[in-house]
Amino acid sequence: MRFMGTATDTIDEIPDLSDMPLERLEAELCQGAANLTAAEHTWLLQLAEFDRRLGWELWGCNSCVHWLVWQVGLDARTARDKVRVAQALTQFPLISSAMRLGHLSYSKVRAITRVVVAETEHSLVDMALAGTTNHVERIVAAYRRATPKSDGAHDHAAHDRAAWAGRGLTHRLNDNGTITITMTVPTEPGVAFLSAVETFAAPPTPDVDGHILSRQARLADAAVAMAEVAVAAEDGERLSSAPRFLVQLHVGEGMCEIDGIGDSVGTPLAVSPATAERLSCDAYAERVLHASNGEVSGISSRASVIRGRLRRLILARDRCCTVPGCGRRGRAEIHHFQHRGKGGTNSTVNLGLTCRYHHHLLHEGGWIAVGTDEGIEFHLPDGRIIRPTPTLTTGNDSDVAAHGRGVDDGRCQWIGDRLDLDMALTCLFSEQPWIDPWRFPRTAGPEHAGRGGPPGLVSVGAGELLT
Image (cartoon, rainbow, N blue to C red; front, side):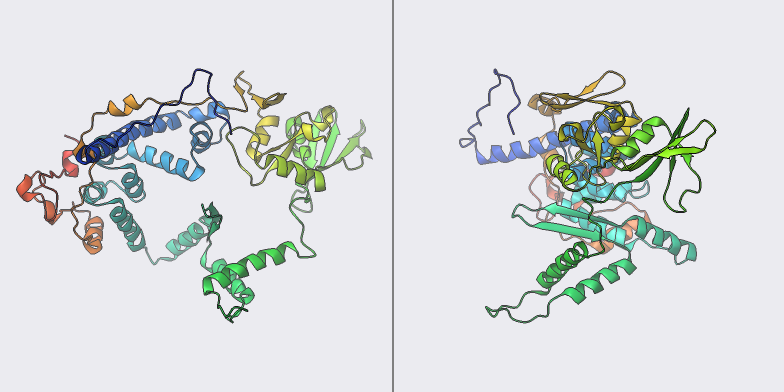
């Protein structure tokens, strides 16, 4: 990775803070936290407006999350949270005001916006003001678990559908070289999976050194063994060589149709030439010729397909969608920059990996891929160009200072008291404002700052944020 700057760019020296008094350093940290929160509030509102206007569509992105990953450099999970929180700020004025004043950090806002409704907004803001992010996360998690559900048959069906729709598998690369895999599935397949893992698990017997592996380690080894057995199955098809489609293109004067496999499609369906080109880009294809009377006059041999060693080469070289900022790896398709029907070959320089979304844009969407010395450029129908290297964005630290928040705005108002989850949930379910007994009255002076609180602490209630 290279530093993308001009010859006149310089790297600022890190300021020496060793002589700053400790009390001043602490105050700067609290004030800076409040200013950062206020600045992020402004940024999130701008993000919500950008998403509302569908600004990300101008760059061929399939969502605002994709745009954030590409242009701002966030990971997908963080980007999804940013968009969700940005939209919530436009709907809940108390939360928005608390964050604008620097009182509620982004972490707290991210947590309470998972469950907030109009009836609980006031209480959730008060709880978030009075506790740490850990407290807020515990309250939100407990509230979601305790949310009452109806026992009616209709609700059971809805619950089953939601459980099925919520299935998924994610992974995280850890700094120590390990991978954490998280899988969420409905009850029945989850039990089936765990039962299968148990059958592959080794017994808890000592190894040659006399050590007994933990149950967690043995189950992890069993899950890996299951995957290896599945891949090595004699009748299994490896994804690297499996064709994407089996397409018959029915070509005649003014006609282009595709025929499916088996009984899934009873009759050929009309498609556009661009769609036919996309389908045959990464597929087996047979060209069926029709005479003037409509009768079949001939059929070609199967055209070559990107498979086997060549396919593995493209997958290893590109690894993900070649459109800058996309990065998708699942359901990838290989695109011919110059289509085979227009003289393109299966040489590696003419092939690139794309996700299904951008592959569609390169055919039906009017995008054109152009090779340059720096890589592949993507020319959009409106004349804009997506270059291999996006333009860097820069910021100004004076913009953060301009929000003018003080030290107390960024200081957490938790005073060391123990979180009472029962009281918090009772308040949320009863939809009554939450009153912290250690902080009453809300605008008390130092003598009512609360047990264990710092001298002179003044609490701010949610009701005062909009005034």
